[in-house]
Length: 447
Ligand code: ADP
Image (cartoon, protein in one colour):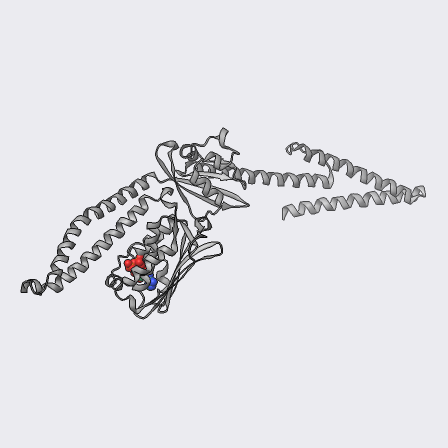
């Protein structure tokens, strides 16, 4: 209110002066008998006065030294006062922002994770203290440099060039001892990037210990289990006529023990497969075989036919014979086999199973479609977790270990592929493995 009245007073004062000048001009003009000339003279004087004031104000603003206010009059005085007020307000805001920025910088600097800000071309704009320790970055060398030159790591360069930052990346970082880093890049603002790197060495070590433990336990259990299973088989194979009545009476028990021993063997095999997959996760060398999927499917189809109830199913295949994959044959065989046996296990007798292998939109797709029991939507996101089963009883009765889809997920991840699951409860499911273009090969001379 106060401010408004000051502005109003200044304008009022200005109108007062203008009226006074015009009145004096009119009176003098009347006395000199030349009103228009005197009025022009009076107005010129008025304009000249304002031009002088304007020049002073412009000089003052251009000098940037706002504290040294110019010697102005009338409405210009009020103008300078308002400009000064605005400037003080700005200064206060700047101070507040600077304090906020300092606090933010201190927080970022204190973070244990390395933080690097990148411009739209990948140049390093800023990094925190942890980036110096963790990534070995130096201001003089790395500011303005492209991030792939500062973080020279094959896996990271590939990750950065793909520009797909939905997932994070784990890399081995030997520059500062035997480090493992988890790197994540997030887009923000206008084409800017924030890279964060976390030391996951300890976590990797613990994971390694866990994997080794599971692998060793599975391995150690296998030998005694093979012996027990062998004897059980011998006992259940005993010729009825020669066996004593006691042994014959125990046959149903032996059969059950045999079945459980088989389950345990399957479980150990799957556990070993999983820990092998995890241990070999970063070795590309195991992933460069050219695999003819048509041949592999022939084996899987034959195995499926050997499953006891298979004759009551219709299994059809639609295979592109020339379409091959670059990867690990043993692992892919295990993944595809798991999907096919799942389809057989979760489809009631008389059902239809369709296996499709073909190229779609530059990607290679392996699908297993069934018209079995299907999966409720709420379970779909969790079925690839270890030991997650929708119906434990059914899974066990059909020889499931609860690890099949976890193996599939791992194998696909290693092959840069994705698993898509479409299912309708009570109607059936379709599991599709989608492989990227760089894993596809064409076997033109394939029959
Ligand atoms: P399991 O050995 O129990 O089959 P998996 O990891 O292979 O373990 O599968 C996890 C769960 O996903 C299964 O227990 C089952 O409930 C569900 N599932 C997998 N495949 C199918 C399918 N084709 N149809 C219906 N449910 C399925």
